[in-house]
Image (cartoon, rainbow, N blue to C red; front, side, top):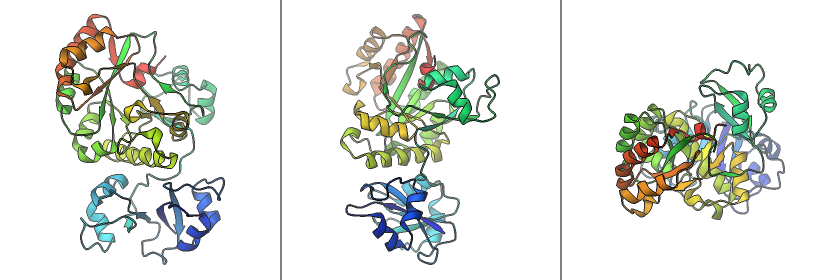
Length: 368
């Protein structure tokens, strides 16, 4: 059997989709964890088990339906394979002219970003000095719940770098501030367009031995993969910032799902990290959105202080806005695209250090 990746269209139902591709309603519902087969949503991505002879493909391969805006380059990044390996499996006359609805066979080594996940589960990598209690408080769960989900985990001997799974609450909340009892702050940088000041920012952070959190959009990830790898290689945390930077509260939940999963796939395949922090574009959200993010294993991160660097107020104003409003546990919003941010950053760091603050990633600042 092969798996066809299909985007539900208006008017679709599982019976017609199954008949179209020679599958069954039960098989589609089972592989996609669909509780109610009569309830599917336009725009959502589902997997369809199909016989190899129905669509020419090697046994066990993935068949992808091209979406608007896709290119072979983007598809190669999404699935972690080379463009050449895609061309070798498909009769594509002009690699620059693929079109929405076109079916593309992917190599067997492709990593499927649309594989259904267990709702509300975070895959978390243990940090140095983590304890079960700290992790539980950070994610709003209990120590016992973590131990139940991870048989064999020794709470007295957590090993940094090992991965565990954690459940997060269904009625999710947006987080604006880290631990207020710890004199630590998080520098965060949102990246959507342009490489801009990234290398300058990395140099400043490196010179001050600071790890920050970068929230990257899919647009930025596929335009600047080398910079993404540079961010990851220097030990900075990478969060998800959507695929095309839409107003998330104004799109459907199936579109939210697509925005998150596509960007997650790019982060995994380019940076080699597994994100669980999400920053909504424009800071916009509603409860349905927060719950959808939680079901995908994400925590929604806003900010304590907006540097307003996106208004280009001048480096001195950026410094004043951050330093004058600083509080323990603050999450500071900045953007990698603004030259004034890079101009202001050394003074922000120096003045906060003078006040006794240390710096950490968002994950570290959330720690209790």
